[in-house]
Amino acid sequence: MSNSPAPNDDTDWTLVQRTLAGDQRAYGLLVLKYQRRIQRLIGRMVRDVDLVEDIAQETFIRAYRALHQFRGDAQFYTWLYRIAINTAKKSLLDLKRNPTVTDNFGDSDDEDETSWRKPELTSDETPESALAAKEIATVVNAALEALPADLKQAITLREIDGLSYEEIAELMECPIGTVRSRIFRAREAVSQKIKPLLEKRTGKRW
Image 1 (cartoon, rainbow, N blue to C red):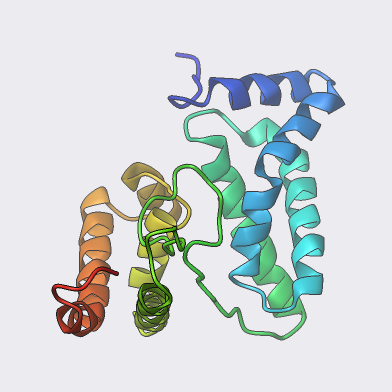
Image 2: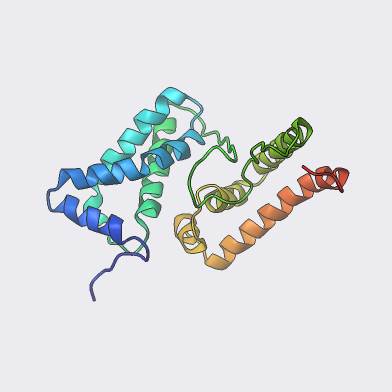
């Protein structure tokens, strides 16, 4: 039985096959497609902005060298994501630094990121409502930072990176049920932190 590409990943699978056949431009398209997402991912682990681009470049070099190992039984981004994480961790270890996650909601333009995004100030909103939204975003980020590592990773993969439960389970090497439980617990913890703010503004437009 031959390996087939993951659902909705036909284009990536085709580009991978073209690259393996010697078409360097095909890999360039993959880099172009995922470069910004990988840089944002690494940026949440590395505070040193100067290192982000270097680690991202190393990620794509490693991915290129290991491209023959990609079987298409998972999304290409899921596979690339793991390489990026490992590359960043190795770089930080080499530099004797500790990874620091700084999750900033709403700073991404990915279409699949729909949860907990920072509201934009529209014509019918007021500075007061914008301030309230900023306050809530601050509380959300603080609540995330306080989560256990496994819960924070699960909710970040889901809410920020837009990965499916199946992809998260693969990345975290645990059952889907565990992923769902971690995300539920993370959401509950965050909700408990922002609940007082929402109750304080009951009846107000924000």
